[in-house]
Amino acid sequence: MVALDGLEVTAGRPALLEVAPVGIAEETDPSPLLLAEKVQKVYRTGRVVVHALIDLDLRVDAGEMVAVMGPSGCGKTTLLNCLSGLDSIDGGRVLIDGTDLFAMSDVERTSHRAANMGFVFQAFNLVPVFTAAENVELPLLLTGVAQQQARERAVEMLDRVGLKDRAEHRPGEMSGGEQQRVTIARALVAKPAIVWADEPTGALDTHMAQQVMDLLCRLNREERQTIVLVSHDPAVGERASRLVRMRDGRLESDGREVLTGVDGRGLRPDEQRPGAARAG
Ligand SMILES: Nc1ncnc2c1ncn2[C@@H]1O[C@H](COP(=O)(O)OP(=O)(O)O)[C@@H](O)[C@H]1O
Ligand SMILES: [Mg+2]
Image 1 (cartoon, rainbow, N blue to C red):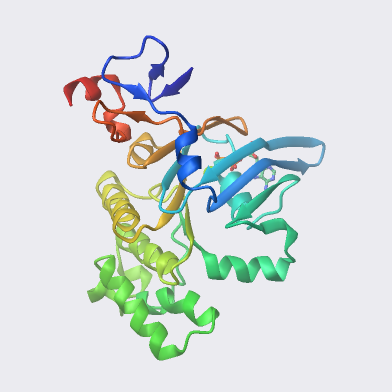
Image 2: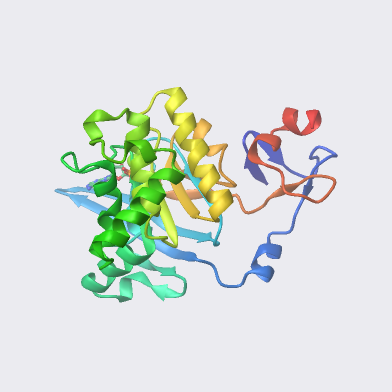
Protein backbone atom coordinates (compact mmCIF):
# COMPACT_ATOMS: atom_id res chain seq x y z
CA MET A 1 0.00 0.00 0.00
CA VAL A 2 1.27 3.46 -0.91
CA ALA A 3 0.09 6.69 0.71
CA LEU A 4 0.01 9.71 -1.61
CA ASP A 5 -1.14 13.03 -0.18
CA GLY A 6 -3.52 11.25 2.17
CA LEU A 7 -4.85 9.01 -0.60
CA GLU A 8 -4.20 5.39 0.17
CA VAL A 9 -3.73 3.35 -2.98
CA THR A 10 -5.11 -0.09 -2.27
CA ALA A 11 -7.30 -2.63 -4.00
CA GLY A 12 -10.29 -0.45 -3.16
CA ARG A 13 -8.90 2.67 -4.86
CA PRO A 14 -11.22 5.17 -6.57
CA ALA A 15 -12.56 3.90 -9.92
CA LEU A 16 -11.01 6.77 -11.93
CA LEU A 17 -7.49 5.88 -10.92
CA GLU A 18 -5.19 3.16 -12.19
CA VAL A 19 -1.83 2.36 -10.66
CA ALA A 20 0.83 2.27 -13.38
CA PRO A 21 3.43 -0.49 -12.97
CA VAL A 22 6.61 0.89 -11.43
CA GLY A 23 8.76 -0.90 -14.03
CA ILE A 24 7.65 1.20 -17.02
CA ALA A 25 9.93 4.21 -16.38
CA GLU A 26 12.92 1.92 -15.89
CA GLU A 27 12.33 0.18 -19.22
CA THR A 28 12.12 3.39 -21.27
CA ASP A 29 15.13 5.08 -19.57
CA PRO A 30 17.60 2.53 -18.23
CA SER A 31 20.29 5.01 -17.11
CA PRO A 32 19.18 7.37 -14.37
CA LEU A 33 20.85 10.74 -13.94
CA LEU A 34 21.21 10.12 -10.23
CA LEU A 35 21.25 6.79 -8.45
CA ALA A 36 21.75 6.60 -4.70
CA GLU A 37 22.07 3.10 -3.27
CA LYS A 38 21.94 2.19 0.43
CA VAL A 39 23.41 5.55 1.44
CA GLN A 40 24.32 5.87 5.12
CA LYS A 41 25.20 9.04 7.01
CA VAL A 42 26.10 9.03 10.69
CA TYR A 43 26.83 12.16 12.73
CA ARG A 44 28.88 11.62 15.88
CA THR A 45 28.94 14.55 18.31
CA GLY A 46 30.59 13.57 21.57
CA ARG A 47 28.71 10.50 22.73
CA VAL A 48 25.64 11.29 20.64
CA VAL A 49 25.31 9.27 17.44
CA VAL A 50 22.67 10.34 14.92
CA HIS A 51 21.84 8.01 12.01
CA ALA A 52 20.78 10.80 9.66
CA LEU A 53 20.47 8.62 6.49
CA ILE A 54 19.65 4.93 6.74
CA ASP A 55 19.85 2.63 3.68
CA LEU A 56 18.63 5.44 1.48
CA ASP A 57 17.87 4.53 -2.14
CA LEU A 58 16.84 7.21 -4.62
CA ARG A 59 16.69 7.42 -8.39
CA VAL A 60 16.23 10.63 -10.35
CA ASP A 61 15.83 10.73 -14.12
CA ALA A 62 16.84 13.62 -16.38
CA GLY A 63 14.13 16.25 -16.65
CA GLU A 64 12.40 15.40 -13.39
CA MET A 65 11.46 17.89 -10.71
CA VAL A 66 11.55 15.91 -7.47
CA ALA A 67 10.48 17.27 -4.09
CA VAL A 68 11.78 15.52 -0.98
CA MET A 69 9.39 16.27 1.85
CA GLY A 70 9.41 15.47 5.52
CA PRO A 71 9.32 17.02 8.98
CA SER A 72 12.15 19.13 10.37
CA GLY A 73 15.11 16.98 11.45
CA CYS A 74 14.20 13.96 9.27
CA GLY A 75 17.40 14.32 7.23
CA LYS A 76 16.45 16.37 4.15
CA THR A 77 19.45 18.72 4.25
CA THR A 78 21.72 15.76 4.96
CA LEU A 79 20.28 13.97 1.92
CA LEU A 80 20.92 16.97 -0.31
CA ASN A 81 24.45 17.48 1.02
CA CYS A 82 25.37 13.80 0.71
CA LEU A 83 23.80 13.12 -2.69
CA SER A 84 25.44 16.24 -4.16
CA GLY A 85 28.83 15.34 -2.66
CA LEU A 86 28.99 18.49 -0.51
CA ASP A 87 29.34 16.16 2.48
CA SER A 88 30.83 12.67 2.81
CA ILE A 89 28.84 9.45 3.27
CA ASP A 90 29.42 6.50 5.62
CA GLY A 91 28.12 3.75 3.38
CA GLY A 92 26.47 2.99 0.06
CA ARG A 93 27.19 4.85 -3.18
CA VAL A 94 25.99 7.75 -5.30
CA LEU A 95 26.20 7.61 -9.09
CA ILE A 96 25.76 10.75 -11.18
CA ASP A 97 25.26 9.74 -14.81
CA GLY A 98 27.00 6.46 -13.98
CA THR A 99 30.00 8.10 -12.27
CA ASP A 100 30.61 7.16 -8.63
CA LEU A 101 30.78 10.48 -6.76
CA PHE A 102 32.70 9.08 -3.80
CA ALA A 103 35.21 7.10 -5.85
CA MET A 104 36.63 10.48 -6.94
CA SER A 105 39.26 12.47 -5.06
CA ASP A 106 38.06 15.58 -3.21
CA VAL A 107 39.52 17.77 -5.96
CA GLU A 108 37.80 15.76 -8.71
CA ARG A 109 34.50 15.84 -6.81
CA THR A 110 34.73 19.61 -6.39
CA SER A 111 35.31 20.21 -10.09
CA HIS A 112 32.64 17.62 -11.00
CA ARG A 113 30.23 19.57 -8.79
CA ALA A 114 31.17 22.92 -10.35
CA ALA A 115 30.58 21.50 -13.84
CA ASN A 116 27.45 19.45 -13.15
CA MET A 117 25.53 20.91 -10.22
CA GLY A 118 23.85 24.14 -9.21
CA PHE A 119 22.66 25.04 -5.71
CA VAL A 120 19.87 27.15 -4.25
CA PHE A 121 19.78 27.54 -0.47
CA GLN A 122 17.22 29.00 1.91
CA ALA A 123 19.61 31.82 2.89
CA PHE A 124 20.25 33.10 -0.62
CA ASN A 125 24.08 33.04 -0.17
CA LEU A 126 24.80 35.82 -2.66
CA VAL A 127 28.04 37.77 -2.40
CA PRO A 128 26.80 41.06 -0.89
CA VAL A 129 29.38 43.36 -2.51
CA PHE A 130 28.79 41.89 -5.97
CA THR A 131 26.03 43.01 -8.34
CA ALA A 132 23.43 40.51 -9.54
CA ALA A 133 25.34 40.05 -12.81
CA GLU A 134 28.64 39.53 -10.95
CA ASN A 135 27.02 36.93 -8.68
CA VAL A 136 25.48 35.05 -11.60
CA GLU A 137 28.67 35.01 -13.71
CA LEU A 138 30.75 33.63 -10.82
CA PRO A 139 30.24 29.88 -11.60
CA LEU A 140 31.22 30.54 -15.22
CA LEU A 141 34.40 32.41 -14.27
CA LEU A 142 35.31 29.59 -11.87
CA THR A 143 35.08 27.07 -14.69
CA GLY A 144 37.26 29.17 -16.99
CA VAL A 145 34.73 30.98 -19.21
CA ALA A 146 36.12 34.30 -20.51
CA GLN A 147 34.93 37.46 -18.73
CA GLN A 148 32.93 38.97 -21.59
CA GLN A 149 31.20 35.73 -22.50
CA ALA A 150 30.44 35.06 -18.82
CA ARG A 151 28.85 38.50 -18.46
CA GLU A 152 26.71 38.00 -21.59
CA ARG A 153 25.47 34.64 -20.37
CA ALA A 154 24.83 36.01 -16.86
CA VAL A 155 22.70 38.87 -18.18
CA GLU A 156 20.84 36.48 -20.49
CA MET A 157 20.15 34.19 -17.51
CA LEU A 158 18.96 37.16 -15.42
CA ASP A 159 16.60 37.95 -18.29
CA ARG A 160 15.22 34.40 -18.15
CA VAL A 161 14.38 34.84 -14.44
CA GLY A 162 12.79 38.24 -15.15
CA LEU A 163 15.55 40.35 -13.60
CA LYS A 164 17.44 41.85 -16.54
CA ASP A 165 16.80 45.35 -15.19
CA ARG A 166 18.36 44.39 -11.84
CA ALA A 167 21.72 43.28 -13.31
CA GLU A 168 23.62 46.15 -11.70
CA HIS A 169 21.81 45.93 -8.33
CA ARG A 170 23.51 44.51 -5.24
CA PRO A 171 21.66 41.91 -3.12
CA GLY A 172 20.91 44.53 -0.41
CA GLU A 173 19.00 46.55 -3.03
CA MET A 174 16.67 43.68 -3.93
CA SER A 175 13.71 41.96 -2.23
CA GLY A 176 14.08 38.44 -0.84
CA GLY A 177 12.17 37.00 -3.79
CA GLU A 178 14.40 38.84 -6.26
CA GLN A 179 17.53 37.67 -4.44
CA GLN A 180 16.32 34.08 -4.62
CA ARG A 181 15.67 34.49 -8.35
CA VAL A 182 19.28 35.70 -8.69
CA THR A 183 20.51 32.56 -6.90
CA ILE A 184 18.36 30.48 -9.26
CA ALA A 185 19.97 32.27 -12.21
CA ARG A 186 23.39 31.57 -10.67
CA ALA A 187 22.49 27.89 -10.13
CA LEU A 188 21.42 27.43 -13.75
CA VAL A 189 23.86 29.63 -15.65
CA ALA A 190 26.45 26.89 -16.25
CA LYS A 191 23.71 24.50 -17.52
CA PRO A 192 24.22 21.94 -14.74
CA ALA A 193 22.86 18.40 -14.97
CA ILE A 194 21.15 18.81 -11.58
CA VAL A 195 20.00 21.79 -9.55
CA TRP A 196 19.70 21.13 -5.80
CA ALA A 197 17.47 23.40 -3.73
CA ASP A 198 17.27 23.27 0.07
CA GLU A 199 14.10 24.96 1.39
CA PRO A 200 14.26 27.49 -1.49
CA THR A 201 11.17 29.31 -0.25
CA GLY A 202 11.91 28.98 3.48
CA ALA A 203 12.84 32.64 3.97
CA LEU A 204 10.10 34.10 1.74
CA ASP A 205 6.53 35.24 2.31
CA THR A 206 3.72 33.33 0.59
CA HIS A 207 3.55 35.55 -2.50
CA MET A 208 7.30 35.57 -3.14
CA ALA A 209 7.48 31.84 -2.40
CA GLN A 210 4.87 31.25 -5.08
CA GLN A 211 6.84 33.33 -7.61
CA VAL A 212 10.00 31.35 -6.87
CA MET A 213 8.14 28.04 -7.27
CA ASP A 214 6.54 29.31 -10.52
CA LEU A 215 10.03 30.06 -11.79
CA LEU A 216 11.51 26.68 -10.80
CA CYS A 217 8.55 24.87 -12.40
CA ARG A 218 8.91 26.90 -15.61
CA LEU A 219 12.66 26.25 -15.84
CA ASN A 220 12.02 22.54 -15.24
CA ARG A 221 9.32 22.44 -17.91
CA GLU A 222 10.75 24.71 -20.59
CA GLU A 223 14.45 23.89 -20.25
CA ARG A 224 14.03 20.32 -18.98
CA GLN A 225 16.21 21.34 -16.05
CA THR A 226 16.44 18.49 -13.55
CA ILE A 227 15.69 19.85 -10.08
CA VAL A 228 15.77 18.08 -6.71
CA LEU A 229 14.40 20.23 -3.92
CA VAL A 230 13.90 19.48 -0.26
CA SER A 231 11.28 21.23 1.84
CA HIS A 232 9.00 20.74 4.82
CA ASP A 233 6.36 22.95 3.13
CA PRO A 234 3.46 21.03 1.48
CA ALA A 235 2.84 24.01 -0.86
CA VAL A 236 6.29 23.38 -2.34
CA GLY A 237 5.91 19.60 -2.56
CA GLU A 238 2.65 19.70 -4.47
CA ARG A 239 4.27 21.69 -7.32
CA ALA A 240 6.84 18.99 -8.10
CA SER A 241 6.42 16.26 -10.70
CA ARG A 242 7.30 13.66 -8.07
CA LEU A 243 6.99 13.68 -4.31
CA VAL A 244 9.43 11.69 -2.19
CA ARG A 245 8.52 11.31 1.47
CA MET A 246 11.15 11.03 4.16
CA ARG A 247 10.98 10.25 7.87
CA ASP A 248 13.71 9.60 10.45
CA GLY A 249 16.48 9.21 7.88
CA ARG A 250 14.57 6.78 5.65
CA LEU A 251 12.43 7.16 2.54
CA GLU A 252 8.79 6.36 3.28
CA SER A 253 7.82 6.58 -0.39
CA ASP A 254 9.82 7.52 -3.48
CA GLY A 255 6.69 8.58 -5.35
CA ARG A 256 7.51 6.44 -8.38
CA GLU A 257 4.29 4.51 -8.17
CA VAL A 258 2.45 7.11 -10.23
CA LEU A 259 -1.28 7.34 -10.54
CA THR A 260 -2.69 7.69 -14.05
CA GLY A 261 -6.06 8.99 -15.17
CA VAL A 262 -8.55 7.09 -17.38
CA ASP A 263 -6.83 8.47 -20.49
CA GLY A 264 -3.49 7.05 -19.34
CA ARG A 265 -1.77 10.39 -18.71
CA GLY A 266 0.04 10.96 -15.42
CA LEU A 267 -1.81 12.97 -12.85
CA ARG A 268 -0.25 16.04 -11.29
CA PRO A 269 0.10 15.75 -7.50
CA ASP A 270 -2.81 18.21 -7.02
CA GLU A 271 -5.00 15.93 -9.16
CA GLN A 272 -3.97 12.89 -7.16
CA ARG A 273 -5.99 13.89 -4.12
CA PRO A 274 -9.29 12.01 -4.13
CA GLY A 275 -11.47 15.16 -4.26
CA ALA A 276 -9.44 16.71 -7.07
CA ALA A 277 -9.47 13.50 -9.12
CA ARG A 278 -13.26 13.20 -8.91
CA ALA A 279 -13.72 16.88 -9.77
CA GLY A 280 -11.46 16.52 -12.85
N1 LIG B 1 26.55 18.58 11.40
C1 LIG B 1 25.77 17.82 12.19
N2 LIG B 1 26.26 17.25 13.30
C2 LIG B 1 25.49 16.45 14.07
N3 LIG B 1 24.19 16.18 13.83
C3 LIG B 1 23.64 16.74 12.74
C4 LIG B 1 24.38 17.60 11.86
N4 LIG B 1 23.58 18.01 10.87
C5 LIG B 1 22.38 17.46 11.11
N5 LIG B 1 22.40 16.69 12.23
C6 LIG B 1 21.29 15.89 12.77
O1 LIG B 1 20.86 14.99 11.74
C7 LIG B 1 19.45 14.92 11.67
C8 LIG B 1 18.96 15.37 10.30
O2 LIG B 1 19.22 16.76 10.16
P1 LIG B 1 18.88 17.57 8.81
O3 LIG B 1 19.42 16.81 7.67
O4 LIG B 1 19.36 18.95 8.99
O5 LIG B 1 17.29 17.52 8.78
P2 LIG B 1 16.22 18.42 8.00
O6 LIG B 1 16.94 19.16 6.92
O7 LIG B 1 15.21 17.46 7.50
O8 LIG B 1 15.63 19.36 9.00
C9 LIG B 1 18.93 15.77 12.82
O9 LIG B 1 18.71 14.92 13.92
C10 LIG B 1 20.07 16.74 13.09
O10 LIG B 1 20.07 17.15 14.43
MG1 LIG C 1 17.10 21.19 6.47
